[in-house]
Amino acid sequence: MPQPQIVWLRRDLRLADQAAFHAAARLGPVIPVYILDDETPAERRMGGASRWYLHQALSALEIELDHHELRLILRRGRADEVLGALVEETGAAGVHALRHYEPWWREAEERLAGKVDLTLHDGLYLLPPGSVVTGGGTPFKIFTPFMRALFAEIGEEEPLPVPDFSRPAKWPKSDRLEDLALLPTAPDWAEGMRQAWTAGSAAAQERFDSFLEVIDDYREDRELPSIDGSSRLSPQLHFGEVSPRQLWAQVAHNPGRGAGFFRAELAWRDYAANLVAQFPRYTEEPYRPGYDHRLWRDPLTDEEAAADLKAWQQGRTGYPIVDAGMRQLWQTGWMHNRVRMIAASFLVKHLLIDWRHGEEWFWDTLVDADHASNGTNWQWVSGTGVDSNMFVRIMAPLSQSEKFDAGDYIRHYVPELASLADPYVHDPEEAGCRPAAYPRKVIGHREARERALAAYRAISR
Image 1 (cartoon, rainbow, N blue to C red):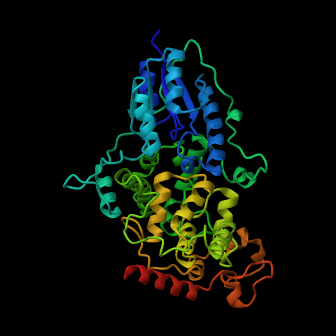
Image 2: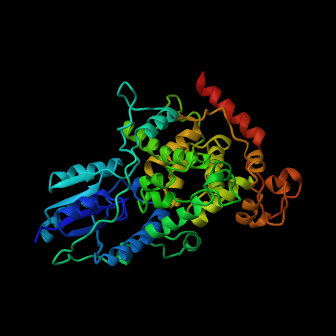
């Protein structure tokens, strides 16, 4: 009987269109392994919301594997050490995995390659980061030309089906999923997420099938927080329960403009990974020079700034659209994309708080917290990124709320305002009908705008 092959899983928790599973299945019996590796840098360990979702995703994968008479082997520890020991324990001929691009996973892959026969495959993105380049052979920095080049390079090959598997004669021991302690207990704050999300490849496909029925309206509806106009597949994409190539293939022959805009969103995900591949510290340091401590108020030393940061985190800023978004985030682990931009801009420009405080909060509270996308999106909003919105372009959250018809969204997530009709719900303080239970604005819009522009002029001299 051929020697078994280990498939090392991380953010690729699916069987279809999974090149590591395909390669391993061709060579011998397959042993799928997931290792909870908390040896990553402390600030980059999965946040609480992501850990909750991971538990659901692993549970769904266990069920899917069981249908193929396979088991998911769960372990804890430093990935390269655990895998090295598993190769010896099982007599595996080698380890197969999808290539990951986070700095800590690159380091783990390098360490593991020195211990076992490691084969890395592509499959996290539409095309491997670094493979889409300019005519001169250099990486793209600006999104639009990157997207055009990516669209031109993507072939039409069909995603890989679920392979035929053989099983090892003996399975190694596995930890129980509960032993990984991924779920919150004291207190259990995940009820809203349990209501919002169903994990697994089957649930991802069901969600996408529903989205395809309304994709023609995606360009307009994705901007409206009060309706379910986006795909809401970001957690499934992040954890690899569905591949971007699977989604691309299903919309590739749709001539509607909605399909084109959806493919552009998939391209942005690739773009973010390409930026971090070029600039490994992009999620930690501003790309543009000059955005130093003089621009930001520091919550670590400034009590007023600390109070403002807390109000933002708790959805108590007095700006209904911002507060609705932050409360949706806390309750469900997700926030509507338009509202993410409004809430992020508010932190950076209205409150003059460094974008990295927001990136850190999103990292802990998003079920789709992605290293490349999270950092890239925050740098775009703050004006510090490679291809980003200018700092001096300051979103007006109250007018944004009216423009994108967020009344029902606000009434749902900010119950103090549930009785207010449009247009009063967008700015109850200005309308003179702010309920006593709802906080006053932490700062007026005009005052915040003038303060932000003055701070920017000061560092630009």
